[in-house]
Image (cartoon, rainbow, N blue to C red):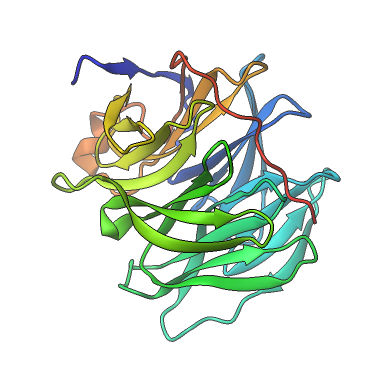
Length: 293
């Protein structure tokens, strides 16, 4: 393992099949994260180590706090609300194409719009879409021909949007217009193309560096604003799904991972697969965005 990678430790040995979408909730000082295959939204309190889960009626890709309370979810093949009592309310079920897909990762921009994309159940090429849910609950198909929509975040000045279609084996960057929520001028930002490693979720820190979870790579890699490698985090299990900054000072990184994709032999020798990890990377994140709808 490269010497410039910071080791992460187990924060919660949850053993979930497909952990994803960690998001820090400033109001409750808890980490919200999901188990896609387990159809559950989790609430982790790092101060006590307690984790509570709420079952939901579909596969949640990510759950993000709303400005008025509760959560907005990218779930199944649509969007929904989960209120503070744990009751689920459907917003919209989006029409499926010829190839069935499910919601995957997403994020909110600074204007409170919720961006989330899909993946075909077998990562069929071009079968997925990146959607935008606006505060008035209107839905826009922003990007089509996607294979496995994953991490998304913005530069500190909101002029750039970073985006992962995992099967492209790279992070791309768009010019971003905060006023209109439009994207343009897509181009490669950083390659993740070694062997079977795929880029998954990502987050941007307060200095504008991009942290990318590496499925199959046992790491979260950090890239400078010019796309050059700049260290990262090492983990003891391979299938890493997403990083997020949290804690009162936003200086702690939480990282989700998966048991999915590992053989019985690999699982027998890996006691941390499906755990929630944390570390102190030496930099801070930015205040998490919330949904304005």
